[in-house]
Image 1 (cartoon, one colour):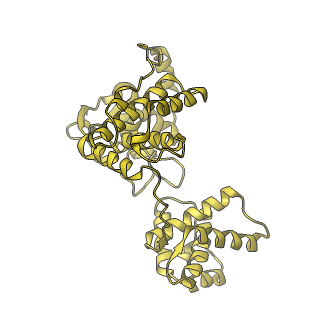
Image 2 (cartoon, helix red, strand yellow; image 1 turned 180 degrees about the vertical axis):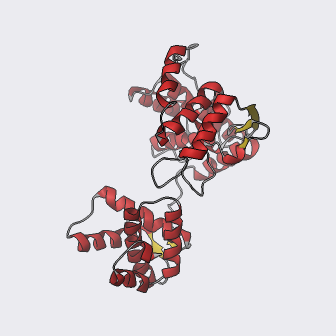
Length: 331
């Protein structure tokens, strides 16, 4: 693998002489298959060599902080200056991914936060009892973490949270510029959380029912749709071109316009979801974890076929639409 990245025999020999050669070459081969550029592969090979020496000296286990320190020191010795924060982040990302692929990364567990047990139980409830999607659960947990962080330190149990605490957090977020919908989302999240807590006997049921949500008005945030003329002009800018970006974007635009798909549904579309025999497309919905089949019209089908035949890069990923520049990965 290294002889395909470097040209000088002495350099190739130095990289091959380092520890964990097989694991490093396997990682680099995977990166090459994903479309990383040769210059990026050179940088990755250097990071892996530095990490391999440190890993060997530490008995096959290495933590993130130590790896970062060693990489920054090695870059300082190599260039005569410390790397920028952005460069250090990129180097660390490669090293951590390699260590994780070998199960050699030492993960330092953070101490449990306030109400961590209750929040974990609520997450299990949302997943197992309510069947919510991972994205919705993540959003709720994010809102909860912000709310808990804003509570006074003296609030040590769920039962000590009062409506005054809830209203103070909502008021503070409003002063920071949160809109009515964002505040309503937070209030709805807190209502759901405290209803669950009340069912477990951790707080009074009146806490959830006492949270007032901001009023939303019909159609206040409905976006204005482009006119048919605007849509035709938009499609015309991508239809005649031979540029790979334009070919891909034209297929995406037709799916959005003709089939009314959401952005996330297009991004999650897999090659396995296209049934060319039945001329249908399977759309998987994340909220209720269901799936619906829709017909593929001729313009949409032709645009997708053109993208697959002329513009889609070769990749191990099964997503239909990929980035147009390496490393090739789903949108």
